[in-house]
Length: 448
Image (cartoon, rainbow, N blue to C red; front, side):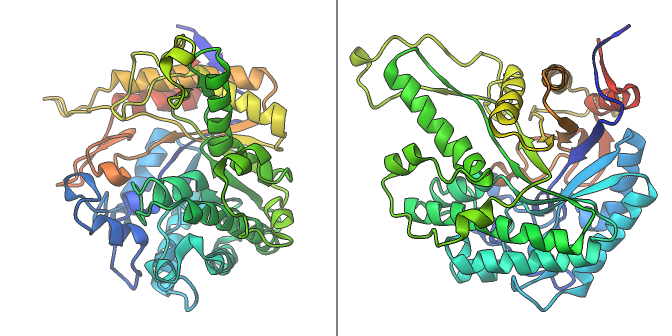
């Protein structure tokens, strides 16, 4: 059997997780409360009343999990730091037990020749900062810089790759406008303030990390996605461009010194007084890489225009969906990688998340087959290789996720892992997709 796609010899293969989704130990060893602790403990917020109190118990089982990474052949592991585990109140003093946990984890990764890729913020803001206004308050951006300074001072001698934020769109919009994620608010003014302060905290933190890690690589992780008009009509094309502005350009443009997109500012019709002199220059701090999290595309229909005044819809999402009800659209990964490279020209790109949830079950022989996930990975990796051939400076790919875990508002009802987790016993079982991914890593190619 041959290969249908191959990758550069220096391409990096990894898997990704985030702190609240896997660690558990939510109140152990001096850890402070996060907004996700508060949110998940509030009845009605998370499916089945699930919380991240235990999750995958990675806080206690991290040695076993690193061994699993080694057995899979992972070359890199992207994980996030729990801010309230290090700074329980969001600012100093530092919790030494929290620091020690991440030092042990990083040391074990390096002993196993697995490169650590650290994300500083993956949505678990210290509740103490939320009580003072959260990301809607400028002071939280200042606190983030203090946190980034603490972590990069401690781990900077061992960790080369640093991402400031994971998906600021999700933190701002799903947490402050849609109310589906912590802190569960629904306010457009707060959303704009949160988005700006997230980016501002990022921009302020970049030079601090560079100072503490002179040979480090610093970036940010976004969740850009192609937004396709549902018909060739003016209304649908305009709606798709607005959706692109709200999801993609609102973050990509300021990171590349273009400011917030004027068409979106006009459409939102909100005061932009959260932007102070010097903010946009800070946000545009030069980056070494951009992380791209991709799952699906958007098909946008202008529902405000009466159907009889709009053209017939000609583009529909495909019938193949993941358990999250997301369309499986591998070509969108190629499209968004090329668009980001040719429109924005970051020095390097990584696919920092890509994966799918399906209803996995343990077979009588103790194995877990997940042919749909394997197919999802296979087709998306082909598009990843295609982007490289088109000239995109793509340096690595991280499967989401290493482990089945706490899937935010969906609780434990959705499984994304390469490794099956029995949440009652904490047993881990590598799925068929994990064994296949190991072969991909070993051969640096996608087999037929």
